Every structure is written in C-alpha cells, then in structure tokens.
Length: 234
Image (cartoon, rainbow, N blue to C red):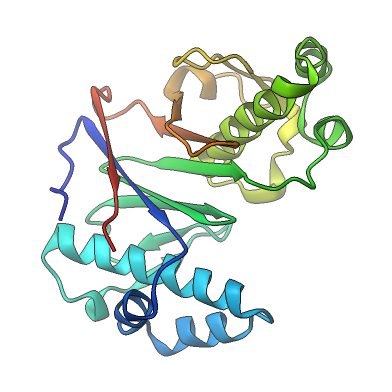
C-alpha cells in the first residue's frame, strides 16, 4: 500500500478497470447502499463493473492511506458536485475512461483526467467545443497520426484544470487555453479567471498507448516537489 503523501507530494494511483471476479468482489464489498444503487443503474455489465472498481478502488486507497476501515469512509458533494471526504483528512480526485482509472490524492485541491482509447473520437469535430481559436490553429499543425494525441493532451489538461477549480460545466473548456505540446510543464492561460493561472499548475502524467492523462493542483500551501505514480496490483 502506498504511503500517505507528504505536504509537497501528490500520489496518483493508476489501475486497469479490467479485473477478475475475485478482485471485483473485494472492491465491491465496502460500497455503501447508495453506491451499490448507482452501480446497478448502469445498463451494461461492463459499465457496472467499471463503476464498482472505480468506487471500490477509491475506498481501498483512502482507507489504506488513513488506516481506516473502507466501510467507515463517508463522502459528500460540494456545491458543483465535486466529491470530498467527510472530515477532510486528504483531498482526492478521480477520472476513468474506457479501461483505465486514475486517482490523485494530496493535501491540497487537485484535479486529474484521463482520456483516450476510443477509435470513434474525431478531433477536428470536437475541437470547436473544446479549444480556443489559437488552440485549434496549433492543433491543425499536427499531421493525422499525431493530431489525436495532441487533442487528447489538450483535452485532459483542460478537464484537470476545471476539476481543480471545482466549477463543473459552468466554466466552458473553450474559455481558457493550454499548450498542446509534449513538454512536461504545461502553459496555462485563463481568460475567465486571470489570477487562477498564477495559483495553479498543470503537468502530464504517464498514460497507456493512445491515451493522455493530466494533473492539476493548487500551488498552496507549499510547492509540489514530487508526484508519485503507483500502478495498482490486482
């Protein structure tokens, strides 16, 4: 089990959502009645399994870090629907897509996002609703093979930033800019909240092939000096 992150660290757990039945049963066991009900509402079995693995992994990780029974954890939703741990011992954020789950934990507000793995996405079709004119111009400079990954890099960076703000859909992705390149440091320019670019940081996370993942965090109370990525065991 990973160690509780220090004040200048962010812990990121990465897990495949494709698990065997024994692992699914273990992760599902601590879910409360409301979580079981939400899982059951999914129409397809694949989606029900993914939802159970996601919720169970969060409980298992937080309980291990805090030395608590996974069943004892209680969650609440903020004004924009962002979940948090009752008691506020640590902050967390969760993202999953297709077959992959990312959970970020720290002693600060943060957001994580992973996208990709779908052959049905059309970067050129989606770009006008996600990117600014400048970002679309940057995207057009990539050839067909690299364009989707550039799109995914920009998309995950924007989603992670919106999640760290906790604004939900009230802040359109096309209202602020990020760089689309492969550099670890990500440039952030926000036209809606100019000061926000000075108090938040962004970086990419290692991601499976044909995916992109990004992490955003609040600079305070101390700078982040270490990001620990852990791949979950079965």
